Amino acid sequence: MNTVELEDLVGMHTLSGVDRVTITPEVEEYKYGDADVLNFVLDGKVHSAIEADNDGYRSMLGQIFVSEGKLENMFVPVGVLGVMREHSSYACEILDLYDVANGKLVLSVGTENSDDWYPWFVAEFEPRNLHVNE
Image (cartoon, rainbow, N blue to C red; front, side, top):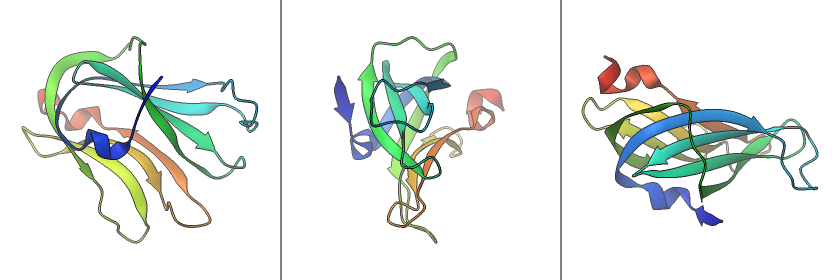
């Protein structure tokens, strides 16, 4: 399994698919139920961002890895720019992907409130912000 860091995805890419699914982790330490997974296709490769549940209430981005999976929601490749989100009122480790044609935010993945007591997993896709959907 080829793991990827958020910072590795900074820069220009093409986005051509996004799915959000729920899985039952096969890891014994993950005992708080199912995990959310955001699958997205960048530059023709499927990336899977998996939620890591902390205690049933708090969660964070566990890992991103390149997978062999197929996505249901595929679309014409769109140019995107990946940037790490600046800290606002919370510290965060979030990658934002912006459509280069219109500058709108289309995908965010990572951990919000990453250095505090109550972090949470961020996995958001806004298909209406893709310029092809305007």
